[in-house]
Length: 432
Image (cartoon, rainbow, N blue to C red):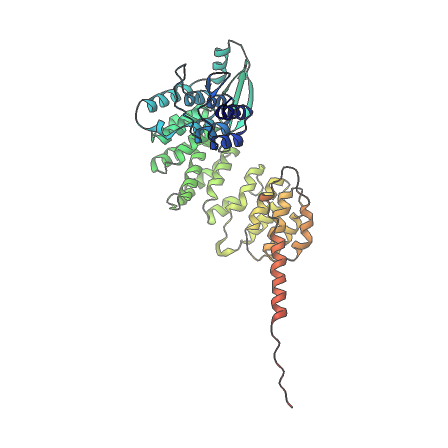
């Protein structure tokens, strides 16, 4: 067996194991990215795609594998990825050349449109001839969304086809209507599902008056899911506007105040309050104070971000609200309030006192943030509070915890003491 054959065999083995790191090493060493998987006669990229292995598929494409290679059955690796219904995997193997005008682009778009209309479970029953039901597992997408992977009779399909179609249309600058994107989102009515998120992001990125007006028009829709989608689009628009640093639309968040004031669906209200945290003033302050005792902790959690800090200090009513939320019975509300307090620099002594209380919280993240906030306030109680953080709990990422604040506090004060020691004494006059 030649050296080339040995490298190819190792590449096939690495792809089958799902070892993306070794796949990259072997490709760097000269392995053929289009090598065939000996058991199927298909390129190894198809093996990674059938296993829904995005890291390996991405490594192969970046190493030169051809997603548009025509296979004996007339498909291509890209078309097979699209069939699989994993939006992240499909994006990972999508080559830029497929977006150029011409037959490949038309084939790609037509295929995406056809797949967006299928029912994955019905399709699995058709392919396998089995009655079902299909097994279902949630898979995380590469942008933090989820999609469902259905399995039946050894075959698997994801339900993210419509998410890829929406992303593809956006790439091709095709202006799909608001109504069509809403209809797609409603097939997967969950804000964290890839299909819903793709529709929201496509509309939010438009940053135009037409989309804003279309979304706000649905503020009085009787269907809460329609209102939720509209609110999500408006939130996405405000965030996208903030990211481009022109802030032409952020002030329009205040248009949402009347809607938020009458909204009774907590899912919708939570999104509206999130959108309103991107602006500030007496009106948002009043709205926040009106929800301090809301029965849903998600709503109470937004209150600190709605409070007005004109002049750098909280009004007495707002201070009382923050202190109450820092002692809220819900640990999520306490954690969010603690994080907010860690960025608040007002001099009120009650703030430091409640931060000391939070160093005893049941959540390690809350304790760590409270200790760091005390250190940033130059409060000496941070030193005694630091041991309360405790050893890192299982699954806790040290990079997400502010664990060095007390060290910096001690260093600052140590340097100050050294500077005081080094100050020269005034020379005494000699009267002799």
